[in-house]
Amino acid sequence: MELNEVIKSRRKVLAISQLDLAEMADVSLATVNKLLGVLGLEMDFKIRKTIL
Image (cartoon, rainbow, N blue to C red):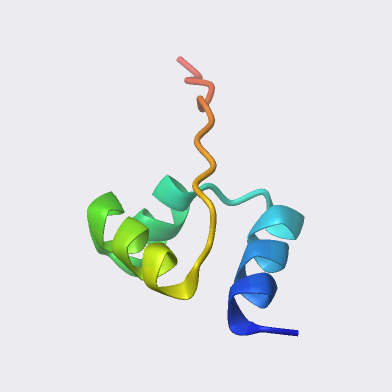
């Protein structure tokens, strides 16, 4: 299994968006996008619910 497949699979299992991943890594979403581009991963955006 390639690294990009491992990351994508793990994010899916944990239900972690790219924005969540960026926040956890303390980097910008743009940085995550650049890394995913280098690794050949696809973009997946979803709207997060806000709980008030």
